[in-house]
Image (cartoon, rainbow, N blue to C red; front, side, top):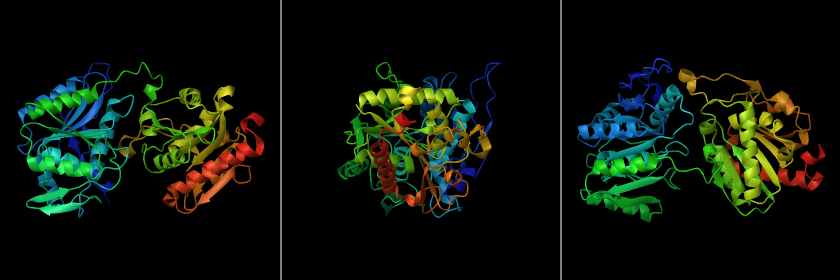
Length: 463
């Protein structure tokens, strides 16, 4: 239901900088759903980020235009939204009883970045002043993992002037002309910065303080002078590329989940095409709690631009070599979910022998028969087609090394075709998400590793 809102409208993009004669053409239409008809500014050169800039209660002003242009010149895609018009449109929308804004933000971000051919995917930053700051905090209340990169709000108010409720499990209290939103239980899914100028409303500051007292790690600071200047300063700092000279793997944008290695092994988890969320994130966190330091590869980011099988395997080798040494372990568990599971058999087969010998288990969750090396963004902008098959690569791998996990309701799983080959088959209830018992799934993965190492020494060494 919520995702159907994404396809609510077609909008014309704002005028972009002139293209060079040999530049790839850019599409002129994007679907923005509930965002209406935002201004879209794209940089001339490389893209360094994406900012969804919401205006204050006065609407889109020259100050907003200046800020957006400055961010564009700094390398950011900027999507400018007139907040009063946006909120008015939400009030009259009759599609659903509540509104879910994150889906349209994420989908539009995907469309724009795919059209520009960005080398990596940049999770959007939500930014705004005053009423837009209040909106930014409310959006944070409904944001799932791996969706929004950061939220930056300046001088937020307490009450969001929107009567229609947002779709969220976070606390909502009705107020005159709108509502006050808390944040959903658990950790924030993205960093949130709150900045106060001398004009900051007292009730807004008190609301943020209350959220901080509830345990939400909102970073706050005081700035002198103009709110637009304060917002620009923070956004430019966030968008500035950080030096990678001390981290040879910085280009891979890995997720580290360190732990004291209790089993002489580490794990590497390749996510599904939705990014680092749900199954992959939960399984990695469960392994970390059980004493398995884990590295996450966000497939949405890594495979946002086309990769070759050779590059995929070479990067996997880099990760293994670096972290086996960094975490002082002898073994590696390779885990992939869905899109991430599909790329692992070929990547494993291409590893150098000495690197391959560290892999004690290959756990494939939600495996399909086809493999792609680029994320496809829906039917509208999909650019990928199946580029290979997984089963021929699996036939080259020692069966005792492999776990294949699938849900009994999955209709396109490749796992049943491995029945009787010696591969460990794990059938769960439910479909592609295995009914959500990810702690139990992580335990099955770790138990499988223990059996493989204890029962026959290092499986790969006995090839």
